[in-house]
Length: 508
Length: 77
Image 1: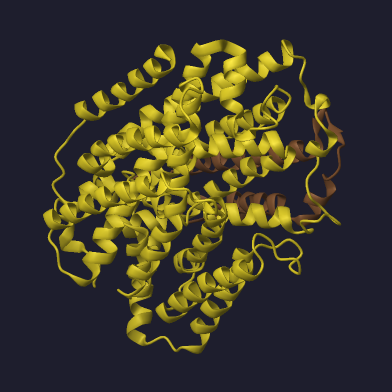
Image 2 (image 1 turned 135 degrees about the horizontal axis):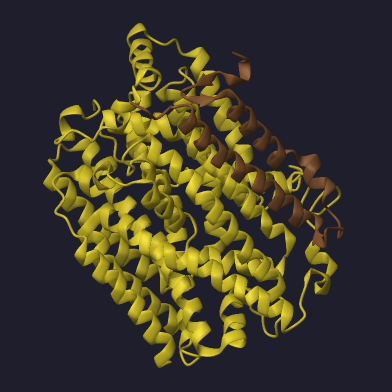
C-alpha cells in the first residue's frame, strides 16, 4: 500500500505545488469565473479533455468495452463529432463572450434571447442534470481507493476515503477559481491522457504477446452492435451517437471552456490539438477493455478492468500508475464541475435577481462551491441504488439545452418564449417518458426519451419563431449581435478583454 | 474563384462540406446496420473498424479545418 498510496500522494502534492506557484489574485468575477479569457490553445485542449474524460469514463466505458464489446466504440466517434460542433461554435460564443463579458452558458442564452428569466431556468436545468454525474465521479473513486488499498478497504469505506480526498482537493478549486482549474487541467491531463494512453497501449501489448488475447479470442457477441431486428431497436446506435454528439457541449462545465481561451484562434487550434489525443486515448481505452474481458476476474467486475489488469500485468507499480491516471482524470472533471456550478449559482441564480459587485459575486460563488462540494460528498456516501439510471436520465435532460443553444447561435429567428417553453416541455417530457418507459421506449425504434423530447422542444422553438412576431427593436438587437460575428476583425477577436469588463456587461 | 474556394466566417466552404460528410458518416443508420454481425475487416471487428475509421475521418477534418484557416489567413490581423 506504500507504493500505491505513495504514488497517489506524490501526484496530489505535485498538483498542489503547481497551483500554489501559479496563483494570481483575481481582480474581477470574470477573472474568477473564466480565468480572464487568457489561455492559449494547449491549455484549452487539455482543459477540454480533462473535463470531457473524467475518471468515471475510464471505469464506465472501460467496463462497457469489457462487458458489451464493440458497441462501446460509439464513444470514440461521437467524441470526435462533438468537437466539430465546438469548432463551429467557437467564433460566435467567444466573440459574444468577450464583447458582453459572458461567464456562463446561461449568460449566452440570456444575451441571445434578450431575457433574464432564461438564465436561471437554463442554469437550474444544467445544475440539476450535472449533479448525478458529479456524485458518480466521486463514487468512481471508491473503485480506485479499494484497489489501491489492495482490497483492505470495503467499497463503502473506499468511497468515503475517495470523497474526503477529492473534497480536500476542492480547497484549491474554491480558492483559485477557473484559473486554477485550467492550470491544473494541463498537469492532470498530461498524466491522465498522455501517460494513460502509454499505459493502456503497454497493457494491450502485454495481453496480446504474453496472454495471446486478440479480437479473435472474444465471444462473437462482443463483436457485434445492435442493428435491424435487434431488441434495442434499429435506431438505437443512431440515438447513442446523436445524443452524445449534441450533449457534449450542453454540460455547463464543458461549455464554459469556450470562454477561457484568449481568442478564436486558440479555440480552433485547441480542437485540432485535442482530437488526435482524444482519438488515441479513447481507442486505446476501449481496445484495452475489450481484450481485458478475457483476464480472470474482469467478467464479474468489468468496471474495475483497469485495476485488475494493471495489477496482473505489472504488479503494484503499474497498479499505482493506473490509479494516478484515474485520479488525474477524476480531479479534472470534478473540480471543473464544481467551479462551473459555483459560478452559475452566483452569476445565474443570485446575480440575476440581486445586483452584486465583483467581490460579492466571487464570495457567493466560493460559498456555493463549498456547499456543493459538501452536499455532493454527502450524497456520494449514501446508498443511492438508482444513481446510474438517474445519471442516464440526466443526459437525456441536459440535451434539451441544445435547441436554444445551437439554433440561437446560427439562426436569427427564435425568441425567449420558444426557447423557455421548448426547454421546459422537453425536460418534462423526458421525465414523463422515463417514468412510464424506464431506460427504453419499445415503440420508438430505439430512439431515446431525450431525442423524442428534443423533437418536441425543436417544434415548439420553431413554431414560436414563426408565430410570435419579432418586434423591430428585437430584430435590430439580434441583427446587431450577428453583425458582431460577421464583421469582427481578427485583431479585435484576439485582443485582451477590457480591464473592467463590467462596463460592457450584457443588459439585464 | 470556385464555390468550394470561397469561405464563410473565414472557414473555407470545402471544410463545411467535409463537416457535413462527417455528420453523415457518423449518423446514417444504414451504415450502422451494415456493420452489425461478427464479421471482421483486416482482423478487426467490422463495427470497431467503422467507429474508429469514421472517427479518424472526423479527426482529420478538424485538423485540416484549422490548417486551412491558418493558410487562408483567417486569423491574421
